[in-house]
Length: 224
Image (cartoon, rainbow, N blue to C red; front, side, top):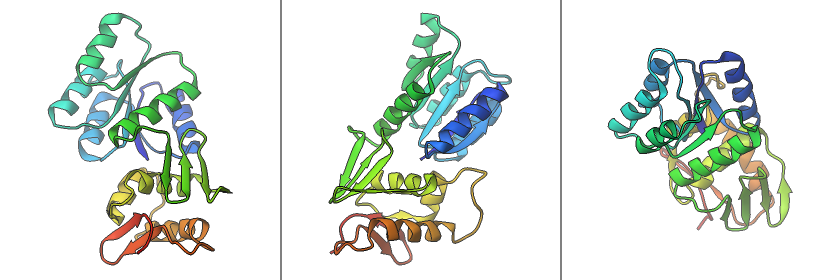
């Protein structure tokens, strides 16, 4: 899943971005409101972590303009402000959740997972496709009860396919949601990682779950 982290304190932004990437997210970072709005209006994020106290444009203005543009991306507001009025203002403008600083990284991850699930209308942190089980909380994947070890990139790809299970997703959509601006270049990088994932998920199983749709893309679901 691809998220936008909006934080103007660069040491904190670097630390959070590293932790999020280690947790399997593709992360873009904006350090001011102008950058945040530009990214948010042009990139299909699965979630936004938004600080309120930003240079150029404050976080509430960014949030209002995103919602005015029709964006429904899940937004988790992060701020040192603890006044009820700030919290109410953010929620009234369309924030999905609110986390005051300082916070634990584990809580941030839990709230972000919930925001992303809501954006995909996914009620549970455990997604099942046939005998494949993906537990987003534990970042654990099993097929037929057998644990499967995945890299962060492979996990991010599988999670996106699982959230869109039963649907054909294009290579461009996968690239937009799984790779950040610093992601690996190359026109065939999606196909390469689908190949890696297919070996781990489908090899040795009669029922193949990762489907190729020629000229279109890929889907996750049982074959015919």
